Image 1 (cartoon, rainbow, N blue to C red):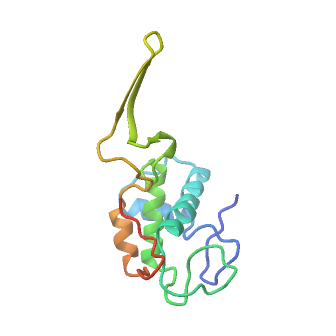
Image 2: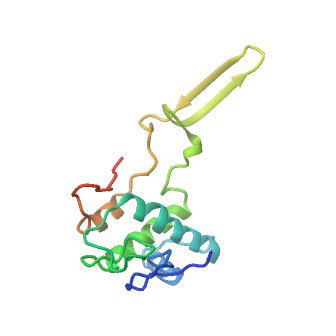
Image 3: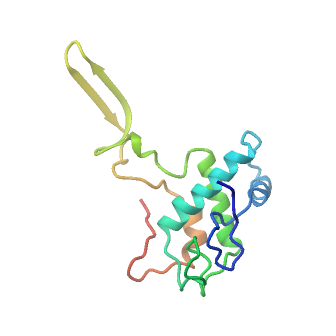
Length: 163
């Protein structure tokens, strides 16, 4: 899937709030080295952050500018501005490092599995969970939460999830 950056008009095909060039510039200004990641990995991280994180966990104020637009932004009250782009870049960096979303395949009802031991001879299973990890699908992202907070709708259906 090609990276299609939203241009503020409500494109029906957009899947990103930022470009790879924006991500690279954002990271470089903050001393974050992304040279270990190729363009495809960066694009995938941007798309994941945009579609699977920002558009899922945050409900923005206003009405979509185009009924058929593919992303939650822009709205008539919230443009794709510096804060939105910074949140998307920060989230993409976290995604590249495996720190944005929790891998749900590692989560049991009691939380994220830290270690598991099975002994077939004795039919014995031992599972240790990370403390405080039960039912978390979104990792803490205070910078992203803060950048987006002033643009969010907290009326019915608000989706800001802080775990």
